[in-house]
Image 1 (cartoon, rainbow, N blue to C red):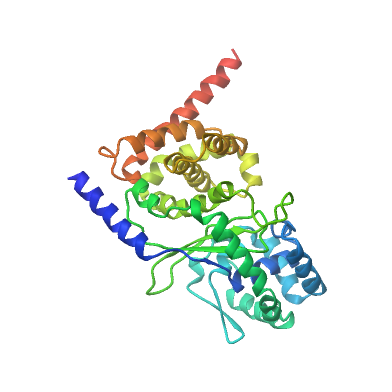
Image 2: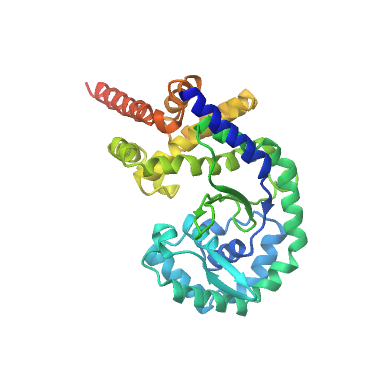
Length: 364
């Protein structure tokens, strides 16, 4: 019976992927929020990796660093930590219609750091920034630049992205609409926000940063390396909902808290401020390695990806990758990753126990 269910899911997924090819986009609201954050001094939006575009941005918006909207945004950053993914969460909930910005959805849909912000007041001030800076003129003047960047991403990165893998690996047909947007002001920053507008399917975004390769002078790095970012972000739309399951959350809460404590300093520096994020990031990063193995990436690239995650203080990654490989090899027993979640818990719990024993042994 499980085989029949899994086959049905995968058949639905195959239909989905043949009819819904993803187009790489540029978004005026994403550029607007990123440039506002840059002008306000947010370091994560000041990486200055986009060559002439960075210079154009600085020349156009530097005169507005004292603008009232910029000052207000700085205050929100200081009081509510509006930075990193919170900036992009707002960006995908905005619409520009005939020169006016309006907010889409509900405030509760935003990243949680927005919960105490007066959204109406912010949108009013954002409209003033948009008008006073002639933002739309700036955006339109760079259309050809955006188009070249999108074409380069299509050519260098999208050939490594296989949407049908997700349904096969997770055992669930995708219900989200995938959207890939290049954040031309984001530098090395990549984000995976989502939105659920009334009467529409949930949209999962991969907002991928843009940079000029200093060695080649061309956009982006080696395609396979860039693809791992895209693969990573879309894993979130399958992994994060698993933690919304109360049974899963209760099983892994204590373990997640201990994992975060083990690498607290490194997690803070990566803006992973709670145990839920650490758990989801761990599974997502392990799943990227599984994707690379399944899709025949060079073994050296796969090893580099695994080493990179350990360097980011996800020290339990080898154990978690091995666990997910067992899941992938035993799908008759575990049709979906949700079915396997208790084994993920056991894997991470064993890692913690082994680490405690190792530290105690050092003190004997």
